[in-house]
Image (cartoon, rainbow, N blue to C red; front, side, top):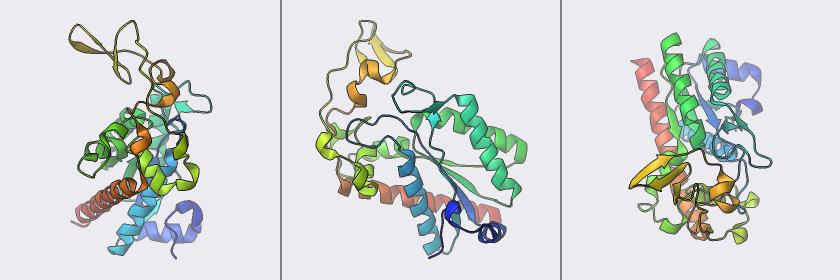
Length: 264
């Protein structure tokens, strides 16, 4: 079987495939807490989805290579998690930019970012704007959980399972990384501790005076054990398979659109 992951392929093969028009998928995520039931490295999910996008593209007659995943996300609410690592937005933007430029120098004409961490969005989008200004290249990003969250009801997911430490990550992890999950450890969310004496409305927000205010909160201050979902125990692998398939279909469609634009 032809490998899609660059790390598993031989250098001459990678060079030939890039020269022939293969796309490059850049998966990235984070190493942080997702509660007691899920592995810390959600970048592994992004990498698995990127590989499935490449396989779907191959079935449609296209070719795509999957770069080694960036395992660290942008610095945000999870910066103080034991075992976790985060990068400042400036450093992460530089990493994304320099990886993209390396592939562009070596013949890549299509690059698609597959991102599994919300805290990385600002750095990725800044890198994409800078790369377009400097090189005239448009690099789209599939922000996995930003896209998949609104699908929860339509795909039959449990509304109570939606949120950090729950869906969509939990169901997708149960589908793609079952051996690393411990669903029996999942538990309902503990009541959020007030911050500044005010009710917490989300990661980084509190309610006051009829409005929502952004505040610099860390996860341990408002979500015990990293769980924000009301009850992540409703997450399940079947739901994760449906989410994964829709994400893969979307990624493959974008590769096809980019290929058409490149050939036009």
